[in-house]
Length: 314
Image (cartoon, rainbow, N blue to C red; front, side):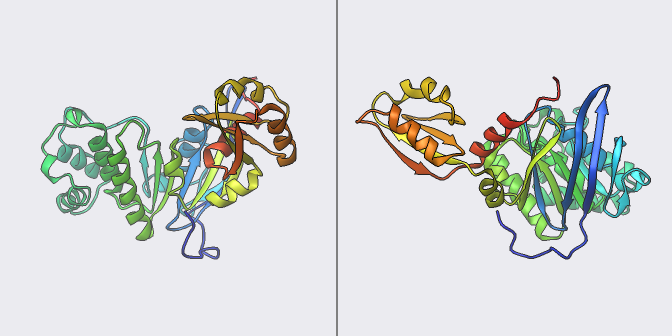
Protein backbone atom coordinates (compact mmCIF):
# COMPACT_ATOMS: atom_id res chain seq x y z
CA UNK A 1 0.00 0.00 0.00
CA UNK A 2 1.65 3.24 -1.14
CA UNK A 3 1.62 6.36 1.04
CA UNK A 4 -0.65 9.18 -0.08
CA UNK A 5 1.32 11.81 1.83
CA UNK A 6 4.99 12.66 1.37
CA UNK A 7 6.59 12.65 4.83
CA UNK A 8 10.20 12.49 3.69
CA UNK A 9 11.12 15.67 5.59
CA UNK A 10 9.35 14.64 8.81
CA UNK A 11 11.46 13.63 11.82
CA UNK A 12 11.23 9.83 12.16
CA UNK A 13 9.52 8.19 15.14
CA UNK A 14 12.07 5.35 14.99
CA UNK A 15 15.59 6.12 13.79
CA UNK A 16 18.13 3.38 14.55
CA UNK A 17 21.51 2.53 13.07
CA UNK A 18 23.43 -0.75 13.05
CA UNK A 19 21.58 -2.26 16.02
CA UNK A 20 23.12 -5.56 17.08
CA UNK A 21 22.16 -8.05 19.79
CA UNK A 22 23.70 -11.43 20.62
CA UNK A 23 22.82 -14.17 23.06
CA UNK A 24 25.92 -16.20 23.79
CA UNK A 25 27.73 -16.73 20.51
CA UNK A 26 24.59 -16.33 18.39
CA UNK A 27 23.98 -12.96 16.72
CA UNK A 28 20.19 -12.54 16.81
CA UNK A 29 19.99 -9.00 15.40
CA UNK A 30 22.84 -8.14 13.06
CA UNK A 31 23.45 -4.43 12.32
CA UNK A 32 19.89 -3.46 11.43
CA UNK A 33 19.09 0.15 10.55
CA UNK A 34 15.54 1.45 10.19
CA UNK A 35 13.41 4.59 10.06
CA UNK A 36 9.67 4.76 10.73
CA UNK A 37 7.80 8.01 10.09
CA UNK A 38 4.82 9.56 11.92
CA UNK A 39 1.53 8.01 10.83
CA UNK A 40 3.28 5.17 9.04
CA UNK A 41 2.35 1.49 9.24
CA UNK A 42 5.64 -0.34 8.88
CA UNK A 43 5.51 -4.09 8.30
CA UNK A 44 8.30 -6.15 9.82
CA UNK A 45 8.45 -9.59 8.29
CA UNK A 46 10.60 -12.67 8.55
CA UNK A 47 10.51 -16.34 9.49
CA UNK A 48 10.22 -17.52 13.08
CA UNK A 49 13.51 -16.99 14.91
CA UNK A 50 14.65 -14.23 12.55
CA UNK A 51 15.12 -11.63 15.33
CA UNK A 52 11.93 -9.60 14.93
CA UNK A 53 10.84 -9.83 18.58
CA UNK A 54 14.35 -9.12 19.87
CA UNK A 55 14.54 -6.04 17.66
CA UNK A 56 11.18 -4.80 18.95
CA UNK A 57 12.20 -5.33 22.56
CA UNK A 58 15.27 -3.16 21.99
CA UNK A 59 13.09 -0.43 20.49
CA UNK A 60 10.80 -0.25 23.51
CA UNK A 61 13.57 -0.30 26.13
CA UNK A 62 13.18 -3.89 27.32
CA UNK A 63 16.56 -4.98 25.93
CA UNK A 64 19.81 -3.05 25.60
CA UNK A 65 21.60 -3.40 22.26
CA UNK A 66 25.17 -4.69 22.29
CA UNK A 67 26.13 -2.09 19.71
CA UNK A 68 24.58 0.46 17.42
CA UNK A 69 22.64 3.59 18.26
CA UNK A 70 19.37 5.32 17.68
CA UNK A 71 16.27 6.94 19.02
CA UNK A 72 12.66 5.94 19.53
CA UNK A 73 10.17 8.80 19.91
CA UNK A 74 13.16 11.12 20.22
CA UNK A 75 14.59 9.23 23.22
CA UNK A 76 17.96 7.51 23.16
CA UNK A 77 17.59 3.72 23.17
CA UNK A 78 20.39 3.16 25.66
CA UNK A 79 20.19 6.26 27.85
CA UNK A 80 16.41 6.77 28.08
CA UNK A 81 14.63 3.39 28.06
CA UNK A 82 12.17 4.40 30.80
CA UNK A 83 10.94 7.39 28.82
CA UNK A 84 10.44 5.14 25.79
CA UNK A 85 8.46 2.57 27.78
CA UNK A 86 5.97 5.18 28.91
CA UNK A 87 5.34 6.42 25.36
CA UNK A 88 5.05 3.11 23.50
CA UNK A 89 2.19 0.63 23.28
CA UNK A 90 3.62 -2.89 23.03
CA UNK A 91 1.40 -5.86 22.14
CA UNK A 92 3.23 -9.16 22.61
CA UNK A 93 2.73 -12.39 20.66
CA UNK A 94 1.25 -14.14 23.68
CA UNK A 95 -1.93 -12.86 25.35
CA UNK A 96 -0.58 -11.26 28.53
CA UNK A 97 -3.64 -10.10 30.43
CA UNK A 98 -5.28 -11.71 33.44
CA UNK A 99 -7.65 -14.47 32.38
CA UNK A 100 -9.53 -14.37 35.70
CA UNK A 101 -10.36 -10.66 35.38
CA UNK A 102 -13.04 -9.16 33.17
CA UNK A 103 -12.27 -6.94 30.19
CA UNK A 104 -13.05 -3.83 32.23
CA UNK A 105 -11.01 -5.02 35.23
CA UNK A 106 -8.00 -5.74 33.01
CA UNK A 107 -8.18 -2.31 31.40
CA UNK A 108 -8.61 -0.60 34.76
CA UNK A 109 -5.55 -2.47 36.07
CA UNK A 110 -3.41 -1.36 33.11
CA UNK A 111 -4.65 2.22 33.49
CA UNK A 112 -3.57 2.17 37.15
CA UNK A 113 -0.09 0.94 36.20
CA UNK A 114 0.34 3.85 33.77
CA UNK A 115 -1.22 6.28 36.26
CA UNK A 116 -3.68 7.37 33.59
CA UNK A 117 -5.56 10.54 34.64
CA UNK A 118 -9.36 10.36 34.69
CA UNK A 119 -9.01 6.59 34.64
CA UNK A 120 -12.69 5.63 34.48
CA UNK A 121 -13.39 7.91 31.51
CA UNK A 122 -10.30 6.65 29.66
CA UNK A 123 -11.32 3.02 30.18
CA UNK A 124 -14.87 3.83 29.03
CA UNK A 125 -13.50 5.43 25.86
CA UNK A 126 -11.23 2.43 25.14
CA UNK A 127 -14.11 0.00 25.59
CA UNK A 128 -16.33 2.04 23.27
CA UNK A 129 -13.65 2.50 20.60
CA UNK A 130 -12.87 -1.23 20.33
CA UNK A 131 -16.51 -2.31 20.52
CA UNK A 132 -16.05 -4.10 23.85
CA UNK A 133 -19.10 -2.69 25.62
CA UNK A 134 -21.31 -5.77 25.42
CA UNK A 135 -18.50 -8.00 26.72
CA UNK A 136 -16.88 -5.72 29.28
CA UNK A 137 -17.98 -7.94 32.19
CA UNK A 138 -16.81 -11.16 30.52
CA UNK A 139 -13.70 -12.88 31.89
CA UNK A 140 -10.71 -12.48 29.59
CA UNK A 141 -10.05 -16.22 29.76
CA UNK A 142 -13.44 -16.89 28.14
CA UNK A 143 -12.80 -14.67 25.11
CA UNK A 144 -12.11 -15.94 21.60
CA UNK A 145 -8.84 -15.04 19.90
CA UNK A 146 -10.38 -12.05 18.11
CA UNK A 147 -11.85 -10.55 21.29
CA UNK A 148 -8.60 -11.12 23.20
CA UNK A 149 -6.89 -9.23 20.41
CA UNK A 150 -9.27 -6.29 20.83
CA UNK A 151 -8.69 -6.26 24.58
CA UNK A 152 -4.92 -6.27 24.08
CA UNK A 153 -5.11 -3.40 21.59
CA UNK A 154 -7.37 -1.40 23.90
CA UNK A 155 -4.87 -1.90 26.73
CA UNK A 156 -2.02 -0.71 24.48
CA UNK A 157 -3.87 2.53 23.78
CA UNK A 158 -4.87 3.53 27.34
CA UNK A 159 -1.85 5.76 27.97
CA UNK A 160 -2.19 7.36 24.52
CA UNK A 161 1.13 6.23 23.02
CA UNK A 162 2.61 7.78 19.92
CA UNK A 163 3.94 4.44 18.67
CA UNK A 164 2.48 0.93 18.64
CA UNK A 165 4.75 -2.11 18.49
CA UNK A 166 2.57 -5.08 17.55
CA UNK A 167 4.21 -8.51 17.54
CA UNK A 168 2.17 -10.90 15.36
CA UNK A 169 -1.09 -9.53 16.79
CA UNK A 170 -3.39 -11.44 14.42
CA UNK A 171 -1.88 -14.92 14.74
CA UNK A 172 -4.59 -17.49 15.27
CA UNK A 173 -7.63 -15.25 14.73
CA UNK A 174 -10.29 -15.61 12.03
CA UNK A 175 -10.28 -13.57 8.78
CA UNK A 176 -13.06 -11.20 9.88
CA UNK A 177 -11.28 -10.43 13.17
CA UNK A 178 -8.08 -9.78 11.23
CA UNK A 179 -9.88 -7.41 8.86
CA UNK A 180 -11.55 -5.55 11.74
CA UNK A 181 -8.20 -5.25 13.49
CA UNK A 182 -6.56 -3.73 10.41
CA UNK A 183 -9.40 -1.25 10.02
CA UNK A 184 -8.59 -0.05 13.55
CA UNK A 185 -4.87 0.17 12.76
CA UNK A 186 -5.47 2.31 9.67
CA UNK A 187 -7.80 4.62 11.60
CA UNK A 188 -5.09 5.09 14.25
CA UNK A 189 -2.43 5.76 11.61
CA UNK A 190 -4.69 8.34 9.97
CA UNK A 191 -4.77 10.11 13.34
CA UNK A 192 -0.95 10.29 13.34
CA UNK A 193 -0.05 7.17 15.33
CA UNK A 194 2.93 5.18 14.02
CA UNK A 195 2.81 1.38 13.94
CA UNK A 196 5.54 -1.23 13.62
CA UNK A 197 3.87 -4.60 13.13
CA UNK A 198 5.17 -8.12 12.56
CA UNK A 199 3.10 -10.55 10.54
CA UNK A 200 3.36 -13.75 8.51
CA UNK A 201 0.30 -12.96 6.40
CA UNK A 202 1.03 -11.63 2.93
CA UNK A 203 -2.34 -9.88 2.64
CA UNK A 204 -1.51 -7.97 5.83
CA UNK A 205 1.96 -7.10 4.55
CA UNK A 206 0.34 -5.52 1.51
CA UNK A 207 -1.70 -3.24 3.79
CA UNK A 208 1.46 -1.64 5.22
CA UNK A 209 2.91 1.61 3.91
CA UNK A 210 6.42 0.16 3.90
CA UNK A 211 8.00 -3.21 4.66
CA UNK A 212 11.23 -4.70 5.92
CA UNK A 213 12.16 -8.36 5.66
CA UNK A 214 14.78 -9.94 7.90
CA UNK A 215 16.15 -13.47 7.97
CA UNK A 216 18.55 -14.82 10.60
CA UNK A 217 18.96 -11.36 12.08
CA UNK A 218 19.90 -9.60 8.86
CA UNK A 219 17.88 -7.01 6.95
CA UNK A 220 17.32 -8.43 3.46
CA UNK A 221 15.13 -5.77 1.83
CA UNK A 222 12.89 -2.81 2.64
CA UNK A 223 10.62 -0.32 0.91
CA UNK A 224 7.06 -0.17 -0.36
CA UNK A 225 5.44 -3.38 -1.62
CA UNK A 226 6.26 -2.34 -5.17
CA UNK A 227 9.88 -1.52 -4.21
CA UNK A 228 10.38 -4.89 -2.53
CA UNK A 229 9.00 -6.84 -5.49
CA UNK A 230 10.94 -4.81 -8.05
CA UNK A 231 14.23 -5.08 -6.13
CA UNK A 232 13.99 -8.89 -6.13
CA UNK A 233 14.25 -9.06 -9.96
CA UNK A 234 12.20 -12.25 -9.99
CA UNK A 235 10.42 -13.56 -13.07
CA UNK A 236 7.56 -16.01 -12.54
CA UNK A 237 5.74 -18.29 -15.00
CA UNK A 238 2.48 -20.19 -14.58
CA UNK A 239 2.51 -23.66 -16.11
CA UNK A 240 -0.75 -25.39 -17.03
CA UNK A 241 -1.69 -28.57 -18.82
CA UNK A 242 -1.79 -32.33 -18.25
CA UNK A 243 0.64 -33.87 -15.75
CA UNK A 244 2.28 -30.55 -14.81
CA UNK A 245 2.74 -31.72 -11.21
CA UNK A 246 5.03 -34.47 -12.49
CA UNK A 247 7.44 -31.73 -13.63
CA UNK A 248 7.90 -30.34 -10.11
CA UNK A 249 10.98 -32.27 -9.02
CA UNK A 250 12.69 -31.96 -12.41
CA UNK A 251 12.18 -28.21 -12.34
CA UNK A 252 13.41 -27.88 -8.75
CA UNK A 253 16.62 -29.72 -9.61
CA UNK A 254 17.29 -27.48 -12.62
CA UNK A 255 20.03 -24.89 -12.20
CA UNK A 256 18.36 -21.52 -12.76
CA UNK A 257 15.03 -22.33 -11.13
CA UNK A 258 14.63 -20.56 -7.80
CA UNK A 259 11.33 -22.04 -6.63
CA UNK A 260 8.41 -24.15 -7.75
CA UNK A 261 5.03 -23.75 -6.06
CA UNK A 262 1.77 -25.62 -6.69
CA UNK A 263 -1.34 -23.50 -7.37
CA UNK A 264 -4.30 -25.87 -7.77
CA UNK A 265 -3.87 -27.69 -11.08
CA UNK A 266 -1.06 -25.37 -12.15
CA UNK A 267 2.45 -24.63 -10.86
CA UNK A 268 4.38 -21.36 -10.58
CA UNK A 269 8.08 -21.37 -11.39
CA UNK A 270 10.36 -18.45 -10.48
CA UNK A 271 13.93 -17.47 -11.22
CA UNK A 272 16.15 -14.43 -11.67
CA UNK A 273 17.24 -14.96 -15.30
CA UNK A 274 14.25 -14.88 -17.69
CA UNK A 275 16.18 -16.23 -20.71
CA UNK A 276 17.60 -19.11 -18.72
CA UNK A 277 14.22 -19.90 -17.19
CA UNK A 278 12.35 -19.91 -20.52
CA UNK A 279 15.06 -22.17 -21.93
CA UNK A 280 14.52 -24.65 -19.10
CA UNK A 281 10.76 -24.58 -19.57
CA UNK A 282 11.06 -25.02 -23.31
CA UNK A 283 13.20 -28.13 -22.85
CA UNK A 284 11.08 -29.79 -20.15
CA UNK A 285 7.48 -29.01 -21.14
CA UNK A 286 5.48 -31.20 -23.50
CA UNK A 287 3.44 -29.94 -26.44
CA UNK A 288 0.19 -30.01 -24.43
CA UNK A 289 1.65 -27.97 -21.59
CA UNK A 290 1.87 -24.19 -21.73
CA UNK A 291 3.46 -21.45 -19.68
CA UNK A 292 2.86 -17.73 -19.41
CA UNK A 293 4.43 -14.94 -17.32
CA UNK A 294 2.58 -13.82 -14.18
CA UNK A 295 3.51 -11.02 -11.74
CA UNK A 296 5.83 -12.03 -8.91
CA UNK A 297 4.17 -11.82 -5.51
CA UNK A 298 5.46 -10.88 -2.07
CA UNK A 299 5.38 -14.54 -1.15
CA UNK A 300 7.60 -15.36 -4.14
CA UNK A 301 10.03 -12.64 -3.07
CA UNK A 302 10.19 -13.67 0.58
CA UNK A 303 10.76 -17.35 -0.22
CA UNK A 304 13.54 -16.31 -2.59
CA UNK A 305 15.13 -14.09 0.07
CA UNK A 306 14.91 -16.86 2.64
CA UNK A 307 16.82 -19.21 0.35
CA UNK A 308 19.59 -16.64 -0.03
CA UNK A 309 19.94 -15.98 3.71
CA UNK A 310 22.72 -17.55 5.75
CA UNK A 311 21.52 -19.49 8.78
CA UNK A 312 22.94 -17.91 11.98
CA UNK A 313 22.82 -21.27 13.78
CA UNK A 314 25.70 -22.54 11.68
